[in-house]
Length: 290
Length: 290
Image 1 (tube, rainbow over the protein chains, first blue to last red):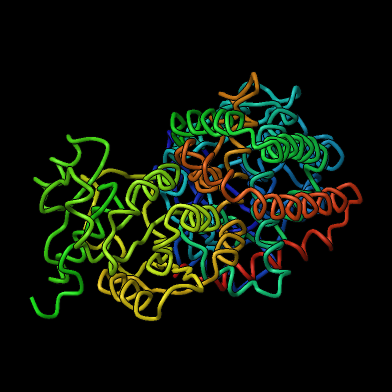
Image 2 (spheres, one colour):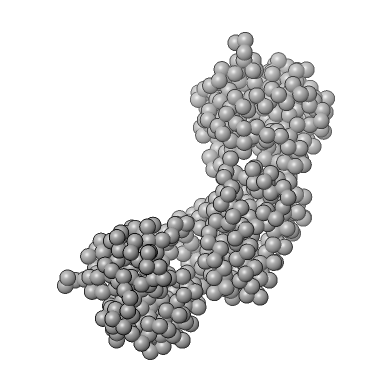
């Protein structure tokens, strides 16, 4: 027990992310007990039976004061409320971490609702997940070789950030740091915009009378391009609204790019088209997912 | 030999498509001899050693008069020239077929350069291929369960179309028919536009000073969305120019879709965003590549 990173971890939202974090830390013997909170007692009981949590909690006062880490692994939409409800119960050394896909909004909630505890709140975004969800999909190796982005606050102590970093490293993740603003700009460009573009393509085809004919001739290029259009509408609505400003910047840039392509097509400018495609292919071919 | 579909087939361009067609027909004992023409004698010798062609040809007059089928499997850019050079050598019963990704342009070339033989020219587009190319990548099952679209001309005899259809069915393909115009409109929507959009996204990121940082955080959604941005710049330049009109229509529609999304974002209209995403997810989830 002496080299356990956390004696007690409390997880809000024992789904794919929260559950996998719990399993990964347990596999490393890095945690004593794990208490789960959530809106569904059925889900919590399932998580207990799966060995993800030690037990489910019922009383913030009783569970949070001696917790080493509180992990907010719920949808971002629930976080402001949870922060407000837990703040007065947190122990002086309790670390708090989230796992939201956007950081500017979560940080804003924390400054407002975890005010007295802001030095112990370390925002995090694990780049993992995908189509599956729920505790049954949780697995100890979900974060193996995946990126986790921390967006530490100026108020955070070096020790707080180091412990959160170590926790994710024990999960097998590769941890990097950005500011919350950098984070949201980066992910607007490489994740949020592509999702919106993919949704937009399928939505546009869906409006047409001949959509069944069209879709019947779609092949593997279409399949891959539109895979992310099968993502959760609620989650992506929230991400778009939370990261609206950075996403609008990206959308404008992209529409300018399409305007230039439209112009090259109108002019039958084959050299320009080929140049655009060649640069894209070169960058894409040299990129490897990390 | 009595039930062979073709006694003699001549293939221009013994690459992935031409070579796989040859191997597939041979596996069904559907062809007597296969003669290859191409710009590289080295490629033709390789194709012969791989058992794809019986021998390479050197004389149009000698090879084309008694051919049952001439298959134009070169890039579309070479087809007009080849048609002009072979027309006077074709036998009265020789069928001619292409494999171009666009049909309006190839049909126009045929009306101009295969004028006297137009009733025997059946345009075809096998929906197969991908990243690999060349005779070494050819395989007998490339077209298995893949779609092949024929765009017969009003001048074609029923017999000519039936024989071309049967040839592709022997390759294991599922054959459908569209008019050349329908074909180009359908593929502008489900193939050409997605390719342009994917190239555009990567090209836009490639212009930025922080592109390495951005790309280092790209994950599996980006990977799939941009897979087709690694396609051949020359081939896609040619497809875009050949199918410019239909592609411009699609591009305009898509930019209108993005304008609507931009508006919903500006207005923080979460209900509208969710509705667009929900319709897209529903259509995408119910679609299966065929």
